[in-house]
Length: 313
Length: 313
Image 1 (cartoon, rainbow over the protein chains, first blue to last red):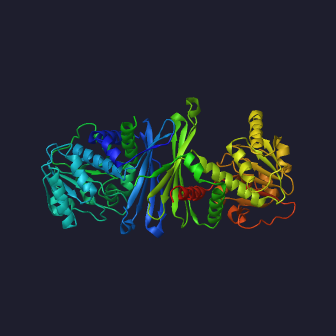
Image 2 (tube, chains in turn purple, green; image 1 turned 90 degrees about the vertical axis):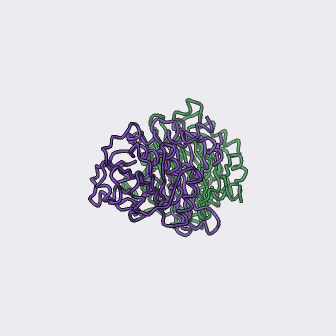
Image 3 (tube, one colour; image 1 turned 90 degrees about the horizontal axis):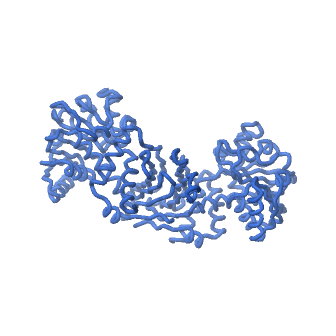
């Protein structure tokens, strides 16, 4: 049986936001309860080409499939007219080991599960009447975080804070085109929104803890390596509730870890995101809440498996 | 660019024994000189289904492609009429990170590179006038080791020693069908052949050190985990030359490691196989030589890359 290969056209046709939200929510809940398997990844480096390859596997316990994701980044490719990133997701039966399908997804699944995890978390933790959203960053996730959150709750205004004026303006235009009212904002103004989502590769905090208002919620999704840092450690000291998608990962290379090492949070001061998605979050009036998301490998398995069930039932 | 998938029919059509021998020889030489990259593999276990998945990557430095190999073993599959093993080999450009091809090889490449590595080593280390070959074991590699060695030198007689009389007889018939004279033999008789190759999953030695004759060569290819052991430790004390395909691996989970721990060899008493393939091995008359092969991941890369160059030049 030769494995089926599906390209992005097939994947997009088979996938709805509801499917992604359900798969990601269930996987975050399973992960919080220890019902996932995520072995240490495999890495290869190609210094001569300024490239690397990461292979990650994940499984949600007792679900039918696991995944092996191969992702490459070759940072000189653009000069040769090639995309920097390439890869695929291999979906394998956890009952028979047979390879069910190969998703030639061009990174789509990782983008979707990151967007859905952020949107679900921001929606669950923010005040029900919060309507202004600020995004820090102007890349793919800046766009997706707002777009996917707007599927879960009404957003009145999107404030965009980016380093490049051109990219900030162009992202605002993209938001306008999909019916989201958006405008550029300074870091201070953006930090004062009801909901703040940071999506940058920053290595120093992108906002000031004192600018975040009482009653606001902040989600950081960009910090995925020890040297990166988006959220100011002092913000964690102001937070009534700190949620992490993976306690150990966030301690090791998330904003939460920076806060703990700086003495602004204790290393048991967080709660897993998963259960917060299951029932309304109880938050005191005027409380600040913070979520640190570093990316959970089992979400790849859950999402890829759900898509393959649509493509090859 | 959707990656090309090649099945076993296409792979067999594109591959000659010469191509396999050349790729494997060059990769063993490169490995001996430290010109390969083999990161620690990634493992997943599925106890409920008695299954596991291993992901291995390899690269021969400065060659155009690297590989990521996914291999599953689900040991209850035969009761459901499914093969135990499944997997694929992903061939990726080491210059751009683009996935060049997926080889849906059903384990063929691993079987071929193991056969070629064993045959090349046995041929290089055995006396030029050695003509009797004994194989211990009756599985796929028992057949392939003899078949591939016969491509490199004339074999007068193949002695087959297996635990099952039926399987031993049937392997002898298979050898006869391809023009190799073969007959069942006791362990003592087989151990006394000019060339001995062990291809079993044994956990206790399959032959006695004292039964191996002066001037003989012995290659062990079955010991690939710490609890396995095919060659008696005392044989290594009789050997004038001990070759390993990977020093550290053979120490860790090869027959060489058992011999070192039992005090029959020193942990620097081995030489890498690679350079022995390059020029005639100098062996004193009457010397016994031993090779311990545990399998080198970079061979996968070398072979898969060579095949893909034929399939998609």
